[in-house]
Length: 371
Image (cartoon, rainbow, N blue to C red; front, side):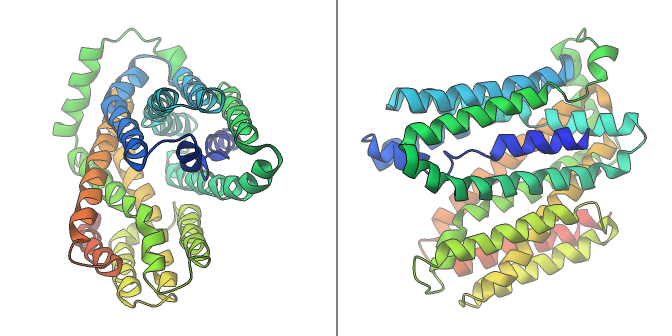
């Protein structure tokens, strides 16, 4: 199963449109406000469908949802490529947001249950950590490939390549195992799943704290969107900024590959990550990004640890629903993080804001990650 899972993650993120779609919007004539409104549409769609998609995954076949998800995303990319205009971009973001929501929670539930079925539940953190590392590596590969493909065929070539690789993801998704689809053919009602999920969060030992932990650790990590601003604030030339961003991305990939190891040291390791983030960002020196890379690698590792702890505390009947609740919480925390950065930028630079963001990680290390 793991090879198919890794191939699925690779196809999902080997999207050549990623580094250039904002340029496509601008060259189509969209203003900065219109582009921002598209991102809002994307976020609202993902948040609105996060929990419902978990319900669907617990009632219907999870593999089927993992097939539909890339098909929706591919349809969105096709619209952008064939009909570049604001309405097409908006519908494309709705489709992309829906595809992401269908995958969120569903994939974790399917992987955990299939590993449990073969007696390998303990490998969940390692498998999911590597899955995320492969997805991040695919994004790097897409960034590298986008330039030559764009030079050969412009936006149509980049868009077509993105559609094709995403459709391949749907093909790979069809090969994923889903023993639950045979054992439970979708006869449970949505209401029963909701009650079951809420009951687990309230009554299962540590489940509520695990949901909150996943939301906090994952949500605060959304600060990675501001890494380019942090890099530029160190005084380097704009041409050097991508290299420093790449350094942090390598740290994230390394953190994913290390997932599944040393979970019992989660609290002290997360505390070290928080200290590295604060020290690296307050240094104001480009070399400080090395510590930032270490910090984000630790945070990536910690997200997988938190997810594994959540999966171990919930039952299969509403696993995707509860996981999606944590995902919804992460989206809310991310929005609050973005708002906090915007507000903090009125008084401080990126280095100080990132250092302040290290505090939640330190608090988490001192509380929830102790057990």
